[in-house]
Image 1 (tube, rainbow, N blue to C red):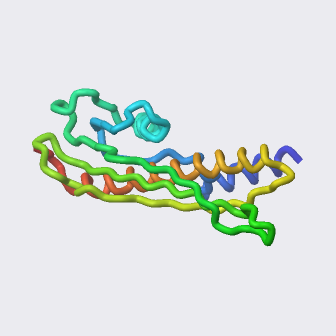
Image 2 (cartoon, one colour):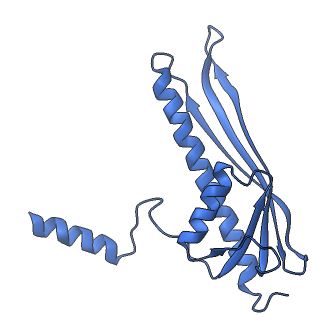
Length: 166
């Protein structure tokens, strides 16, 4: 039985299978300056953590780093998506909007201010409000992860062809 389990794990690993969220973001960036309106916010902290895990040095001095990523704004919203016949909320829609830009050391825009949006809808369980709150928190974390992944992909695509930034 152990051999079968071991064989299954090895075959999944060998074919490139990874659980969602378990893979590292691959990037060719060596160093990046990150700034944000809320430098200690959860999104920026997660972004820096993911970049660090991918081997990118987060440089606090903008003049040293070849590129500077600026998170211009971050807006989380929640609105009632549907209601019941008793006019109580049945589903909520969560929305995360993040605006960012990327510039090189000389201050030239590599990525002009761009917006990324992600949305999720979840059902409010009136009998289990704590469970609904936990689901909302998990969805918000998932949305942040998705936005971070999109930002990293765009930064990587924009810097890949530039060998020597100014």
